[in-house]
Image 1 (cartoon, rainbow, N blue to C red):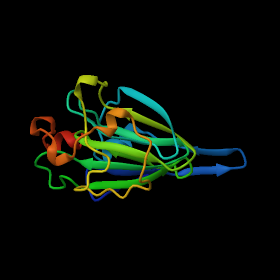
Image 2 (cartoon, rainbow, N blue to C red):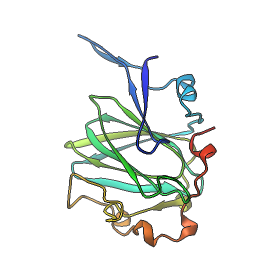
Image 3 (cartoon, rainbow, N blue to C red):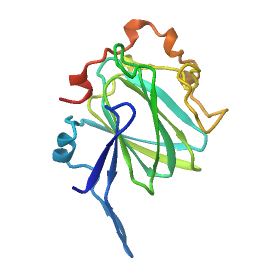
Image 4 (spheres, one colour):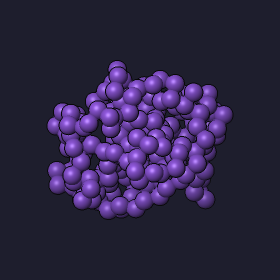
Length: 193
């Protein structure tokens, strides 16, 4: 197998580490093979790809989709980010916990974010290009989010005064969310089965 699948403290969140072949020309790495992903519990038809560029100190998130919920496969094609996933699924054994991984263009790691988890990242390099595949189409009416600096979650961000969108600056704490705006934990849906 040309990639390694590593479970995190939130078992549904998986780090994918591709094998990288380097020589004087550059490198080659296989980043997606449906059969490998399926064997490791990730069985989605990804229908939308997105690319963003952000500058140092920017935090995007923490977002999730309640309508047209999306599983995501995220990576960095240029630069470095601290990628963060928070479990906001009612009834989940890891509700309110988070996982953080450094994704870089050098390590070429990817992170699988299941349906129903909030996702965000902080840019650690001068700029970062962030690429991600989604299992459903974006629906602006379905977007929800929680505050990046929710003290009950306690994410250890590498910045104290991040660059934020106006919308992200106003997101509520998890404990202040209307319960109807939280996804419900369902092992079958979260694992893509």
